[in-house]
Length: 219
Image (cartoon, rainbow, N blue to C red):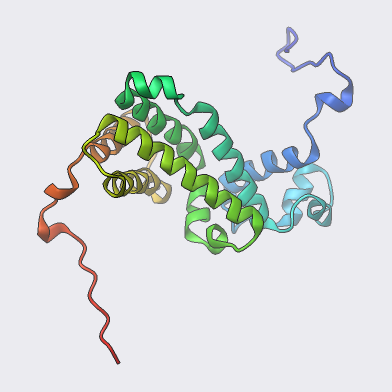
């Protein structure tokens, strides 16, 4: 609730009105990472912004990498919350895919700098249980898109649908390294490119444009 001045109010006990410290750290760290980049922020700076000492952060997170992993874990929560349900997919799988693409961009666009840090560093391949759990959740999200795509395109087998899904996320993730201001027109282009990728025919790609991986010579 908010009072007439726009200040948020709460009828619950004070302890229930304030976010738990862990959530507060994630919210503050997200803002700092967006502004300064993952490598440009220290644990001490996160602690100071929250109002605690740097070492106090370690009561909640094992490392700065762990904070970034937890931020993306919350992002996957959002994706799951906005994912089209089975009835929506059955009724119009193409529209369901469009919703999934739009929801992904809703998260990606304001967090491009975070996404670039996650994808370009060793954080994403960390062996920690939290990182492994996040990767499993990301795989499940891709599989949801694969399921929607096969509902829209029954002629596709699982490998083809999975290839197109991964290619689509490649298109969407590419914006993480762009320094361009993404306005509504640019967003529309990204959405159109993602949908075109999902509904492309992988067998129609010219041979000359395919990536050829040279065979390793035996010793």
